[in-house]
Length: 381
Ligand SMILES: NC(=O)c1ccc[n+]([C@@H]2O[C@H](COP(=O)([O-])OP(=O)(O)OC[C@H]3O[C@@H](n4cnc5c(N)ncnc54)[C@H](O)[C@@H]3O)[C@@H](O)[C@H]2O)c1
Image (tube, rainbow, N blue to C red):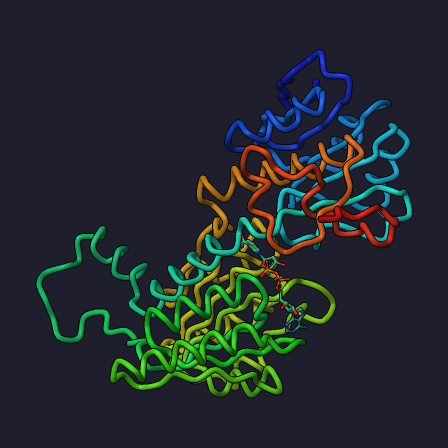
């Protein structure tokens, strides 16, 4: 007997949609019901294997919503195609778990869920930044262990961020939101490294700096680093927000860590393999003043040996997008992708997508990654 449990919503729906995990909120189910879908949801917490997902897809399946923990490649897109499937959505903005070429080869459009994770994920990066700057993990463990015997001038001395330099690797949606939070909240100077210039971010910080000066406060600066090495040497605090692909795999390795300030802070809420985790463990062990805050890990759910023993590291279990608003918004967006495609709607082609969370959403699939390759039609205003 299968170790997995499933529940079915709207059993009389004519289009069968397989969802590999329970998702928060109700709106996403309403969206799928309105598209006449019978929704089969795996209610077990275990990560489904490719074989188990293939079994769930079975002989007839119109669409699927999957998770970043699953490997959606040739085998699964082939199985979905053979079962008559015409739509897939990832329940994530990142899509490094997906072989987009394979999906395109099988003619399956692939959706993701941008926009709804931006502020929530940036806020977690801020939380991790402060947790490591002010050593809240260590201090909490100390309190719980009953070690606090009175105030001391030297107890858990950390780093002040105000006026220092924050470095962002990957200044896209989340990186820019994080950068603005750190600059506006803590009057930091900003340096970013990205493949592209982010003129909007530069203009924003420049206007904010003028506002600060008008209030008699010191100006703040925003500059684009030519190389990741330049950024690492300059920044007091570095936060990673790139995609994970061949260009960013092990972007942070021992050589680059050695360029960072001895008391620098490093935060990663992007994807684990962007950091060579074993090198980070060694670096943190050799440099107790260096601190890292990690939401993601190279080989999730495992951690590199020694990481969990380090006091100068704060670790949380990939929860950067875990606010109810965001997680239910992601569900609505994923359902919107699948329902939109099944209904034959065109694809939305503007960055603003939050209207898909509301009543009266546009009749379009909100975010389809391979729409151009599949020559799908786009929504016209
Ligand atoms: N921890 C979480 O729960 C969580 C939540 C949301 C997103 N994420 C991750 O965050 C990533 C960023 O999300 P986003 O919405 O900001 O995406 P985005 O596409 O808006 O931004 C990514 C940025 O990375 C840049 N980039 C790509 N390759 C690069 C390279 N080699 N060097 C430097 N910059 C490079 C891109 O130009 C882009 O500006 C996602 O891909 C996802 O993997 C994680």
